[in-house]
Image 1 (cartoon, rainbow, N blue to C red):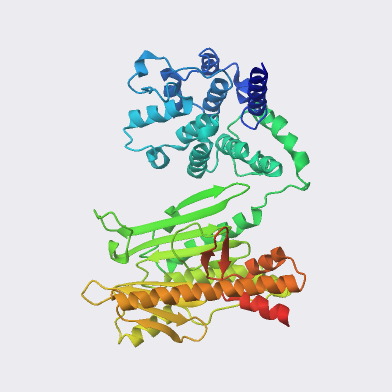
Image 2 (image 1 turned 180 degrees about the vertical axis):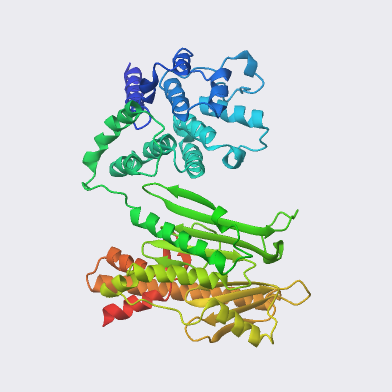
Amino acid sequence: MKILIILIAVLSFNHSVLADSPLTSTEISRAYLNVPIVIKASKTKGELTVALMKYLMDKKNPIAYKIAVINELSLNAIGNFTDDDNTNLLESSDDNPKKLNGVIFHNYISKVNHYQTSSTPLRKADSEVLICLAYLKAFDSDYLSEAIMFAKRARIKNPTSYTIHIICALIEAQQAVEKDLCLTYQLTNYVRINKDLNKDMNQKGIKIVFEYMDLYKKDCTITNVQDIHADSKKAVNTIIKQISTLSSKHPKQLVHIKDADIEKDISHQTFSISFFYQKGKKKRHLHRNLRDDDFEENGIGLNIFFYKGEWPGSKDVNIIPFGDLNIVIYILNDKNGLYQDIEKIIIAEREKLKIVKNEQDNGIRNHQKTISRDKAIQIAKKDANGFLGTWIDCSLKNGNWHINAHSKSANPPKYYVINSENGEILLRLNNTDHPNQKEKLSIYLKNTQESVMEDYKRAIELAEALMIKKEFVLGEYNLVKLQNQFLYGKNEGRTASSVWKIIYKKYSG
């Protein structure tokens, strides 16, 4: 009897959790009860039929109606999928006799579109199919992380749909509600105040969402809510507009610059805008990253990334600070100094906004490198008797330029480390294929990282000795960080560079 009581209590608890959450407490379908397809969905006992899946995949149907269909299905009891037309598509197993609607729809779109892998929809499916897939999967806690991944991709592919953004926010909030109630509120509230969105959901549906989500407002101490990214959006738009004017100086390369692709991922937690432009790319059949020689004589490959937080990429890059933004410029086949022209625009805009002045007013030294990227390459070329390599990668790491050069010919790969302040050659390796030199480079990089981490530890120790919160020192550091690499510790990631020395000197007087 005791076991039965405990089992009932557990089941009741699970039901109460499900019944009171961002997903299950926002009954959007109530705003569309007069829509025929929603009425049809209400009669399937929670089962996702072929007819409903076809409706979800049809681009002519309104996205809000599709979401209402899924909401109506998911808030009903989810039963077995018994449509005889889908027995081949939805085979059961002994371990998993029942199929969930998210899995059903995932399998269906993969079969209809001949997708080879389960991740193919991320690349090939349109934004509405992705958000439908995400919403269906989100109602099963086992697939919540996967649902967030699909929802974010839908948001990137469609940066203006209110419905897609609010559903993505609800899915993220479903995860946040377990850890941060204030964030749960902020995720959907940011969609509400985002004036860049097209309201493709009716007012009744929006009201239903916020009647519940505003209950979490009491858990936030922030009362004056505004678009936290407004200044960043304005800055990015200004910089992109200025870059477009460079077509007069680089007419052959930037003739179609106004047709560049811009990809955005902006939410309360995320700010990322990517600018992509290519001209004169050769046809190729090799599955590898693009290189300079993949472009014609006047071709160009230009990528600019504007983001907040840590660099999401896997490789070391040049990072240009711009207030709370970071900017990365990546150019292939740059033969006419386009990188320097774009960098000048960014620095000029930064000066206009008096960002550098504000940093100095806060008592922070604004550290500037005196040796440019091109100058560092010239120093290495001169040392190598004029020829460094066919492909040259030059990036700033811990205040020094690291140059990695490879050649088409039998010339061995070279590696240089050059001080970015005075141009001194700190390391010279003329054949990094040789085991001894490869080991020497590995030891050098390891020692450099250890030295940088020591700077970090000294700054923190100094902050504690002066009774200054660690967070305050980290905040100041974030204002002055320049082109750094990201150094990850055991449990947390910290940006590290010689700037710690600047903070150290400042507080040590």
